[in-house]
Image 1 (spheres, rainbow, N blue to C red):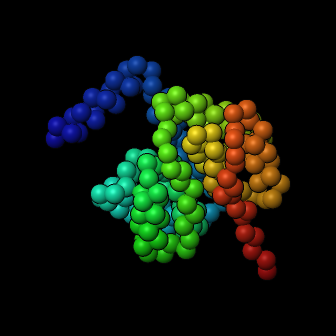
Image 2 (cartoon, rainbow, N blue to C red):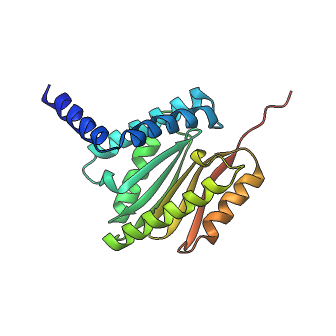
Length: 194
């Protein structure tokens, strides 16, 4: 009961401080994503279930620091991004992801090393700049593209409508000031021929 009262209190504070549009906008964005994602609802559900199972397994694992790893699943292909302390964590995270049922492939984009507070801030700024540029492209459904940035390495994940959109998204990421490298995890929507 206390938990629900705390959540209600936080919601009340947010709404009272003018954050209602933010909450409503987030819900609307989720609805927009559902309506514009190139994957079927069933595929999005399957991908979400795979991601949730991997996240839960990473949290339970004593070797891996789950908070340092971002898990994205796209058409049953798992993409791991983030900065971890050791190669052992990289190997263990990959092993955990591979063991989850229905995973077709694991793409390990994890980096080994340390990430300073300054680097974390710079990564957030770079990710925001790239996302803003993607939003500015009228023919790209920017909500379908996940932008992860770790130590100035940009990973783009998502499904786009055609090869031209994919190349434009990659070019935006590559030409944004601060980008060191771009990892391409974008796939082009499969068209059904009759």
